[in-house]
Amino acid sequence: MIKKIFILFIIIIIFSNLHADDYYINNIFTAIEDNDINYIKYIIENDTQILQSRLPKDYENNLEGATPLLYAIYNDKKDIIKLLINNLDTSYLEERDDKNYNSIMYATAFSDIDILKLISEKYPRLINSETEFRVNILHIASSYNNYEVIEYICTNFNIDINSRDIDGWTALYHAANSQSIESYRLLIKLGADTQITDNNGMYPSTRLRELVMMKYNELSDNDRELFEAIRDNDIKKLKKSIENGANINAEDGYGLSALHFAIRNKNIKAVDVLLDCENINLESTLPNGYYTALDNFSREAVYIGGATPLLYAIFKSNGDSRIVNKLIKKNANINTSDEEGWNSFLYAAAFGNVRIISSLVSKNKSLVNSRTKKNVTALQMAVVYDNIKVISYLVKRLHVDINAKDNDGWTALYYAAANNKAEAYNLLIELGADREIANNEGLKPDDIFFND
Image (cartoon, rainbow, N blue to C red):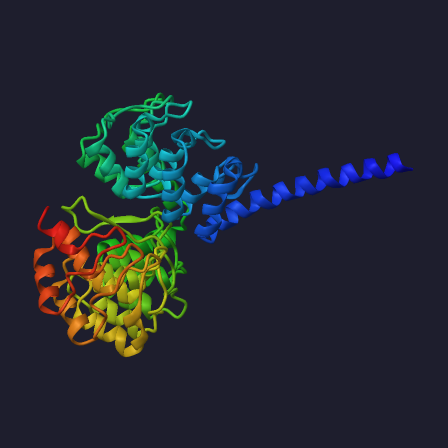
């Protein structure tokens, strides 16, 4: 009897320990999701073994086998990422998930230049990382349409822009295969060879066209006629296609709704026709991962994944607020945000004008306090995009906090200094910006503006 009780006691202990292990493993990933810095610090100081935990098989979003660091990069938890990288052995940066991606590969897929620089400076050897299929970090950035990272890799790392993986795919082919249009164009501007085929003899341009047309051909004849009419500014044909049953909310091969497509083409009459339709979806969104260039001549691109027609119209307004005003009048949701947390007010501060901002505030005064997911303010965005008249309007008329900080402790003045925006910098000084406010690293605006 005593022996049986002893065996039962041992079994209970074993199962308790297993349960405890599961608890801590689950807790580490939950802590990352919740950005629980204190918990991560505790683990680093007391039980680094937990950091060897892995996400299980069949985990969502193809994250099987990801370590806590990889999961933090995926979720863009910068403070946790920095904490882990600065306190753990560099060998931890080499750890790979089940698809053979390590930390620098995750950074090129899911994060930004700051994290890429942090990892590459900590462990430069990782720059040349490849999977068993010879997929490198440039291939990955191109597949995930990580526009800024692509440019950074091509201009700062010694990686051949035309290097091929085991299937003969170059970075350009990877961009084409994932329909990453802006990355595709950027790679060509950076010198990618458009004539390199894959192992089956297919050109990147052929692959891109094939995929776009495949999706486009899934549309009905009436739907295709609708997009062609918008493209050609043929209003009679547009109305006819709608009368014949075209889906006014259909998406083209790039994932743009008919309304987005009309806005992109600045086709005001087509917008009017679509807005007159009873079932038009004013809240349709651009696809995840959607980047677009600021203009046809710039390498600079903006991520606008999840943008509604109103947000997209503000982005494309270029001083012309007619389409924006039509959408507002039609009661498009002015409070909705894109994937990065940018709402209509933040878009207007960056890309719009005073008239658009005034229209939005007249609908909802609380929009003045809008911030992105990273706590970037409207004033800071106006500075980054050189929207000088808006800067003045925000401070003088809307009385926004000129010294407000984002998550990194950057004020609008610091943004002006960091981005070499001399006119914005001087204007902010005139408007009363405090030059003595330091960011989280102890740097003041003048420290970088006059030393650059």
